[in-house]
Image (cartoon, rainbow over the protein chains, first blue to last red):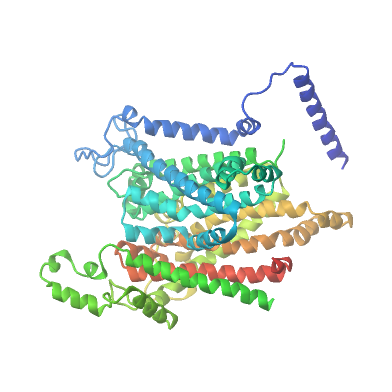
Amino acid sequence: MSEQAVKRRRIDKKFDKIRDTIDTGVKKKEFGSRAFRKMLNNRLAVAGLIFVTVVILASIAAPLICKYDPLKIDLRSTLQKPSAEHILGTDKLGRDLFSRVIYGGRVSILVGLGSALGAAVIGVAIGAYTGYKGGWLDNLMLRLSEIVMAFPQIILVLLFVAIAGQGLMNLIIIFTFTGWGGIYRMTRAQMLSLREEEYVQALQAFGLSTVKICYKHILPNAIGPIVVNITLSTAMFILAEAALSFLGLGVPLNIATWGNIVNVAQDLRILTNYWWLWAPGAAVISLFVLAVNFIGDGLRDSTDPTQQG
Amino acid sequence: MLSYSIRRLLILIPMLLILSFLVYLGLELTPGDAVSYMISPEMLSGVSAADLDALRESLGLNEPFMLRYVKWLGGVVQGDFGYSLSSGVAIKDIVFDRLPATLELSGIALLLSTVMGSFLGTISALKRGSIGDSALTVAGMLGVSIPQFIFGLLAIMLFTLKLGWLPVGGRLVPGYETFMDRMPHLIMPSLVLSATMVAGVMRYSRSSMLDSMNRDFIKTARSKGLPEWRVNLIHGFRVSLTPVIVLIGFRLPTLLGGSVIIEQVFQWPGIGNEFVNAVRARNYPLIMMIAFFSVFAVLFVSFLIDLFTALLDPRVKLD
């Protein structure tokens, strides 16, 4: 008890000191928002942000970094160990693995981020409107989202893959239409509490249109959780793409993606003897998803107003 | 309690009807029909259009949509789930043949993840801020970030190919049929399947435990001079466990989805494996029925869990 009291007094003193320095003008006003500064204090989130930025920049600049075409088959140099010429070695068809990992990042990140943004657009658009408006449309969408979310996601995705066929665009569309439930629910819940605020009543009294109130005035207040959700679902969709490609049912195998690179490890001979064929793909998926999750958690901690300090 | 159960049931039934309709509708939008997947392209040139039509007729593919749906639904209710297109075996037989394997695998994974997850989460909460807590938090993060199939591959590499302790996959070896014979086959898949969920349960039970440790009744228990382990386990842990058990319902979709992947990695002859093969072969009746069963299982379990929560917490019923 006394120990806690001492601790509290110490923190109070610290706060007083900070307030004094700001008041007297010794300390300049810090840049960025409070949430941004708090995020920078989270070492894991910053490390994640750096890693993700590097990987994204590398995959954008892929043609500048890679010496080889990721799809070029060279049967004279198959299954070569990592060397100076091929940094990560070559695969069964003599394709350079470093190029495949870098170019694969383009597709995997595109699928992950594209699907997350697509799902967010649908989920936020519907959730913001129906959450604010309520009524039969709200009920209908709620039931619909319940139906979509009752499916184990991978089973629903595979069902649509069987119907629509494999393909990059197909996969993004399928992920979008099977994955909007979570963000819709969250946006709706946010709107339900925000619509009770007094400024909303004021806006209604001014006679603003429903669309303007909910998208322009309320929605920006819910942006924190939405950004967190987009970040975390990007990680989830990258994992889903990898799992589907591992089954051979995701992006067609002739396109390099991280999942397709690891796909070859189903062959036990490759799993043991040719580790460089799959290990870089496996490592980059895991690290990238881990980094994105760290960013998501950091964002959640820094934007959550219930966690002050 | 009775009226609450009936009300919940009345929500469940229309949802199942809509679901069955949607699943059937999805099937109708498939490119090509069942016949084109039954005959190889070489043979197709030798078969006349009349023969193909006759085949479609015999498979009931020419009737109007609603009639086919009602017929199909009537069959499902009576336990007739149709036939697999690729093998001609009744889907009912396939499901009952494969279901025990999946139940065995996912049941053990569910048990393992619940026990390990809530144990680690509780420890983590009690030792909040310690090195162990941070290590567990990072491990939990790794657990949800590394794809399950990579866990599986690493496990196969280590325990089968390097150490030779465990079989690479499969479930039954001819001649060995008791549970103990299956054990070695079961260890790796169930551990790998539970790994991701352990991480989830751990994070959840950690915050649940922290939450319950801050309640007034914990202070009361302490002030009465109870030993610390009693306060933690009997008073704190028991209360924090309820939401963790409720979480089982939310984990069921993850579990079923995960077993699709894991069964493929370890060649475990379960429903998930059958599902992936059906997707590869565009065996639509089988795809549809398995998808429908998985949703049915999820909805039914969440219905049971709703009842269970209502029993535990009377406030729920008033909602």
